[in-house]
Length: 151
Image 1 (cartoon, rainbow, N blue to C red):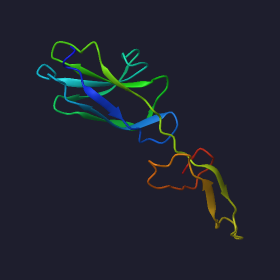
Image 2 (cartoon, rainbow, N blue to C red):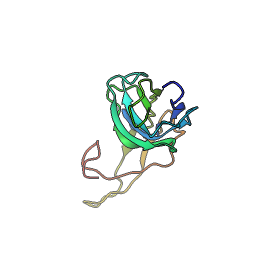
Image 3 (cartoon, helix red, strand yellow):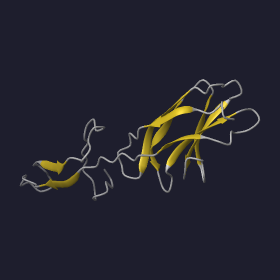
Image 4 (cartoon, rainbow, N blue to C red):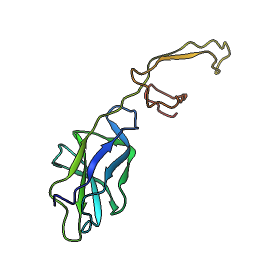
């Protein structure tokens, strides 16, 4: 059990919405993977895997897992990797603490300068997020309300 665990588990959240995850989970090869058939990936409430929720699994030889975008964090604090053999799942996982990346703009403003009915024209401005190191570009939509309905 102790020599078959994943090593150096790491995760960077690429989903920039608050309370949501997405991105690649990586780990290194166990010292002895001869009995490992799968790696089971869970969200958990602690590093031991308490109240875990299965995200998926990968076969031995694969040492990464794509956590799909928009996964809700809820009460989870860790991503865990359990090695699994043909007999059982290991009792001691390896884990990484979830650090939620948040990069939402604020103070969005727009003044319509187009005088024609049913047409828009003008400049949209906003305040950039405090941390924008993971931001590649901004997308703007017309929507029916402030949360993006009918965009």
